[in-house]
Image 1 (tube, rainbow, N blue to C red):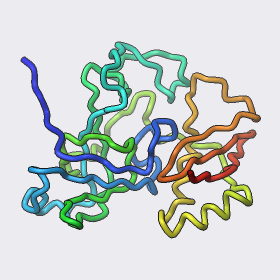
Image 2: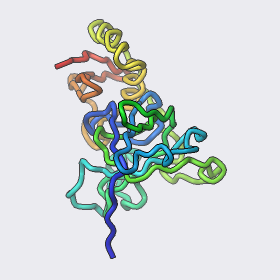
Image 3: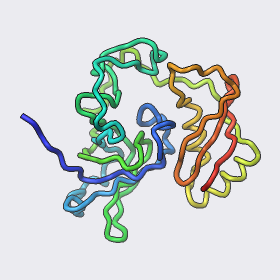
Image 4: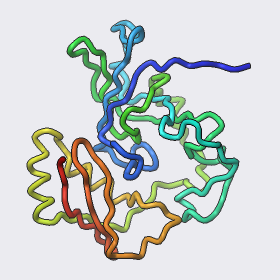
Amino acid sequence: MSYAFEPIGVIHSCFKEKFGIPRQPGLVPSARAVIELTPPFDRDEAVRGLEGFSHVWVVFVFHAVLGAAWRPTVRPPRLGGNERVGVFATRSPFRPNPVGMSAVRLEKILREDGRLSLYVQGGDFLDGTPVIDVKPYVPYVDAIADARGSFAHEAPVSPFLVRFSADADVACQQKEGSFPGVRRLIEEMLSADPRPAYRDTTDSTAVYGTRLYDFDLRWRIEGNMVEVLELVSP
């Protein structure tokens, strides 16, 4: 038996490329996204009462890997990217059904220009992600006090400090008007070290880059210091 799911909306995210997206929701609290509900699911009564919940579960499709073969084992970054475990013991996007689920903070629900949108924070979403469901986060059942997390029991501790070059600092100040909190977003994202764990991360001359909002972010890492080099707008 097969099932077909119709997306109920699409996510507009600050993350425009896969590289740089936090590996789990909540690791970058300043990451903002907008879930735009699409017809016929964009009815006010469909979200009635949701404003009373501080967090929601977002069920979505890993659309950037559609058509890719699923993998029975994967290499989690938390294990250094070298040890393989079963795909069902991870949150890898390369799954038999490429479906993800993230708990995020619900900031507000707003109808503007005829569109009904949910504003959320702390997500790990790629821009353009299709949403197939939204559910309220219910603390008394969803927060399990005695749960175990195997190799991911505790949040990762980052050894990195983030500093901005003079040019990057000026560019950040200029971007704050359009994207409030952008400096904090960059600090949280880079302190979590988005580099793949299984690649050589010892080259201090390497320059990394990804696209955020409407600019390209470039940085390098030396020791325990991340230096933001520039924010380049097209």
